[in-house]
Length: 275
Length: 324
Image (tube, rainbow over all chains, first blue to last red; front, top):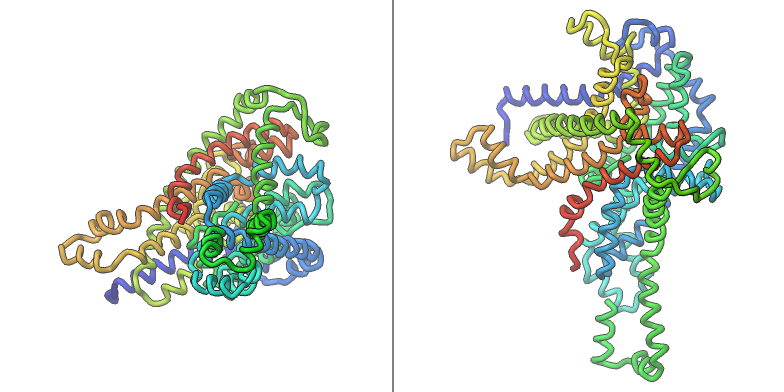
């Protein structure tokens, strides 16, 4: 529907208002990260930094480097584990339809509903016995619960759309199951695989609940979310640095929004649930 | 496709089939190899689901019937405690508050997320300059780590020098800053506002894509019939996108009922446990008071509440599940 000029102005006003609501908190973090503590702790809120400084970023870069690396390892590991498990499973569920297929699909749907705190509480005790606390392996195994069911469901839906006659032709030519999967299905599913790995990455990067529960004590593994949380304890000493660390924590999302917007939108529309 | 293979074999027996007929055992082996090769695609996922979903869910129930203490954490199995954990945890007034608060929190969150999200969806469904650009930015809140969002709002809601209080003071809406994070009532509202904010993009984008699928000839026919904007909305658009609305509410319920990171980020459950919701209180019991059994009991209750969505979930997905 083409809008009249008056309605166009009204719509633009609505869009600006919506964006203001949605983006202001992000703006607030960014400007706070450039402020001196004295300005942050005054009783008047500054809508723009009065004396911009990079001191907070210097603090973060000198103290948070290892946490950023931890987050990166966890995020990449979560994306990789999700792909390794989900892509073949989705292929199976899309190609071979048995009664078991229905049951597995149902189980995956229900698995999406299980609250992370339930998983964390149990895994803490189990990991204690398996010596998986404070380890990347243990944390990545837990973090993949965010993305795995969603990944299988999205990939399967995509693979169902692949032309069956191409696969049939390969089968007639004597291609093995593995060849069909690796040479035909994988390349053709590229865009769905990108979407799924981006969400695996974001889920691993943004995880807090498993980091908080499965990384006990003073282990060397500590992602940036956990580090920011520890900052609030010392809020009185360095709010600016906490905000600068938060800017780093939202950086991957920002980059993906610019670089891979189409894949993100696809995942959102497919109903990716988080937490 | 094993069936197809057998059918072909009956029609024109190739060398392999002849060999298989001569050596039935080898033929059976071959078939089994094919089945196993296919199953190999699924096995990692099955093992993972068993380890990361089924085991924790079942073990959590076991844990909830055990007498636990910090000393028993090294053992996988502790003495049986009957329903003592459930009794203790349900008689705890903070648990009762957390259950009631979570219910109110979920209803209000979904209500406001729907109203605001649907409003934005309608807005972006109109054709105006920069609408695509604006729409792409709307999803920002949804991509941020939840804990970071929580801490962001903790900062905005500060008593002294917080942006929200500053805006209210500047606009003359209040004379004194509101103690958002320090009074129990306001702290709950602060967490609620944060959660509504998080859910807006999810509702807006899913409802927007549903609106895009509404055939324009239907709405145009309604215009020709003299239907007002409101009538078009309630009698044409809403009934058409109802399935999506149901899905969005269901996913929103699943997401909200287990909210954890946000509570920790905004208030850490305080002041004096006033903003504990089920998940954050279960965490507190297990990991701060070291009452794993009680934490597990409350987790089981949370699990059951979340699972209320399962039948709807499976029903919505019935077309996906159908054997082809």
